[in-house]
Length: 571
Image (tube, rainbow, N blue to C red):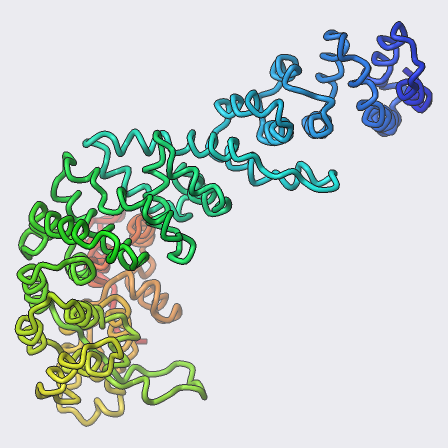
C-alpha cells in the first residue's frame, strides 16, 4: 500500500456513511505493512501508524458485530492503544479472548476496564493473572490511565478489597498454621518497604494509600486479621480512631504465636510485638490492659526470657526485652528480674581525646561530656531501659536502686539529667558516688605520649580496652594506634587486617603491602586470593602477613629460598 494514500483511508474510516462492505478493505489498508520499497527511512510506516491511531476509535465502534475484523484491529493495536480504547469503552471485557491470544493481562488494562461499573466483576477476576507488583500497579497507575478524562473516577472499593485479598491470603494461611505463624508475624512486622517486591510490603503500601477502606477491610472474615496486624504494626496512632482500634484488639496480643512450633523464638517475637504496639498505640494500654499484661507474662515464662544463660541474642536482645517489659508488664517479679539482668550487662567504654581531622567552628565542648558521649555513641541504651522500668508503677524501687549501683558513672549522670526519669529514681542516681574521670579511656596525642616512660604499653592498654568497645569506638582506637609514631611491630600485628587495608590512609596501607609482598609474584597472588572474600574483624594484620610470608619458605625454581620481607618496618 502506498503510504501517501493513508490520509484517504483515514478519512474513509472516520465517515459515518462508510458501507459495512468497505470495512474489510479499509482495515486491511490501515493494518497491512508498508512495502519496504515504499517505506523510505521509516516515514511510510509512521504515516500508517498515525492514520491507524486516528481511525481506531471509529473502527472499534463499527466492528462490534464483526468478531473477525475486531480481532484484527486488536492484534494490530499496541497495549497503550488498547488501554485508551478501554477507558472510553471501545474495548470491553468481551474482547479479552482476542486480547489474550497474543498478550498476557497487564495492570493498565485491568485499571481501564474496572473503571466501568458493569465490568468491575469481570475485571477483578483478571487479578489472578497478575503478580504482586502488577497488583499494586493496578491502583498506583489509576490516575495515569484516566488522565485524558476531565475527572478521573474514584477507585472502586471492591477492587481494592480484591487486591488486598490476593496479597493477604498467603499471610493469612501462615498465621493459621502453628508451624508458620512465627514467620507470618515477622513478615507482617517487617512489611515497611525493606523489600519493595514482597507481598507484605506491597499490601502495606496499598493500605497506607487507601485509609478510607480500613473499616471495611478489618471486618473481612478471611483476611481481616492480617489487616489488623498491619495497622497495629505500621499505622500511626492518630490514623486509627477508637472504633477502628477496637476492631484490631483481637490481633494486638498476637494470639497466633501461643501454639507456635518454636516456643522460645515465638515468645521472644511476641513480647517484641507487644512492646512495639503498645508504644505505637498507647490507647491499647487502657483498652486491653489485662490482656497485654497476661500476654507479656506468658511470653516471659514460655521463652525463659529473663535467664541470661538462655539468651543467644546478646546484649541488644536483652535491652529490647527489658524495654518491652517496662512497657507492657505489670508483674513486679519479672520487672525486678529485668533490672537484675540489665545490671549484669557489660558497661560502656567511653573514649575521649580522638583527634579531630577537620576542626569545626560549631563544635560545642559540652558535647564531649561523658553523658553526652554516652548518647552520641548509642551507649545509653542500658540506662534508658532502666529509666523505662522505673517509670512502670509495678516496678519495685528496691530492684531498680540495686541496679543503679552497678552502672557506669556516665550512665548515672544520664539518668539524673533525663527528663523522663521519675523523681525518686533521679534522686537515687544522684545519691550514688561518681567520679568524673572514672571508667573513661582518654586517647593521648604523640606529644603527650612522649612524657610517658613506656608509650607502647599505653598503646597496648588501648588495644586491650577496645575489645569492650562498640564498633565506632573500636575503629577509632585502632586508627589512633596506627597513626601514632610510637606504634611497634607487635602493636601493628594486633590490628584488624580489615581496618588497616580499608580505613587507614591508603598510602600507608600500600606501603605496608609493598614491604610484605616485595617483588615476589606468588605473594601478590596470595594477597589477591585472600582479599577476594571480605575480611572479618577476627583476622589480624599479623595473620594476613604470615599468610603471605608463608610462601617464602617454599623453594623457588632456581633452587633458592626467598627471604621474608620486612613487613612492618617504617619507611
